[in-house]
Length: 258
Image (tube, rainbow, N blue to C red):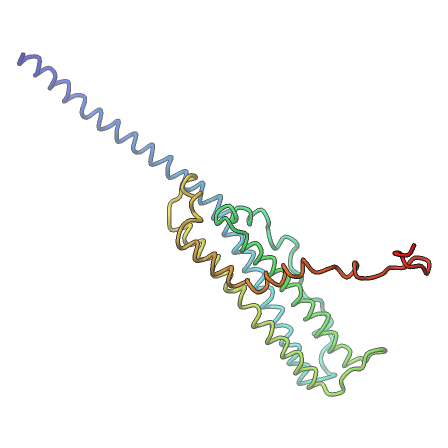
């Protein structure tokens, strides 16, 4: 009996190191594949998703800032030099945003993460704001300067340029105030990226990303930020189109009477 027990002990002494090596190997393999999964999740949702949205938002805001600064300098030059303002300053076209400035596919990934479209809607509002601002710079302010200097065949141009300067200075201040909400949106996007970056998510756990307290708070802040604009847009959708309120004619006869 003692020889039997001794034999078992000898076998155990041989097997225990092998089992330890096997367990360690399995743990290493599991850790490797888990790490690879973390990296894949990070690449899909952060590197190829949220980070690109952040870059695009920064590019739009940078474009606004450079065009805004140029417009401010034009107005300052016009204030100081009047009709001696260099033509190149107000006649050179302003830079337009790239057609792909807002990538819908990246926002789709973000929507899957947070279960909400608020940042896509915010990005659309940013694009509208940017296009309207550039239109104001180029076709409003610069046109006013051009008309003051060269005159107009149809429009009555104020003879006192201080009136023009005051009006557009007020408009620039309004735009500078309105753009702040989009800088805040950029900060919220970076906060989301920080949450995504600081934790090691798997493809299973990332499905519950939207349930995290920090994520919920960020989404609610974004909704509050754009509540007024989005409410106004919803109301505009319900209002009749201009075309529907017009009575078009054909050959001198009203369409509704034809």
